[in-house]
Length: 175
Image (cartoon, rainbow, N blue to C red; front, side):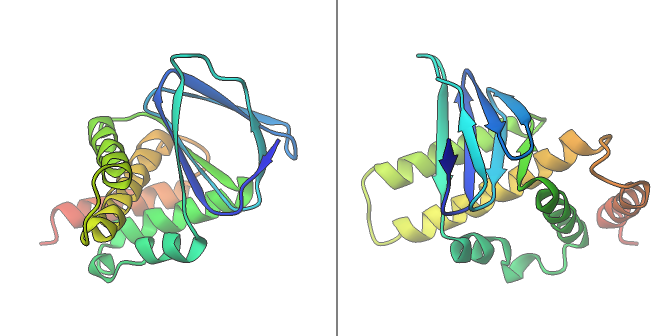
């Protein structure tokens, strides 16, 4: 059993991983390309992983996590703001979010690979900035994957789905 101190993103790079949440009795199995965002202090355990199971764990201080998400460049993106708020509501209910592999999975893979390289590879004075930007890219791609994988799910109310549909259309064609 594990209790994390910071928000975490766990990305299944290969194989699979099963998460168990003793507080709720829920079990979630992630396959290659899936990710889970975990709140601080959530209690969980994972099954023993095999040789082919690789899970990349990205833990960050909550202030850093919030700073990455509250980037001023996207304040006017109504759809992104709406989806972020919907994710936050869903996360508050369970203290974790599951992002299933979707259409943007190659982009998520590239962001994770680049993050790992930037973090563990040769470092220079721009490494910190690059890492922060790739974390931001990864989070935005996970937001998109979360929305795609839950668009037909009960996490979003009928009103949420209608508003998201209208906002999506407005975002594509503002005229």
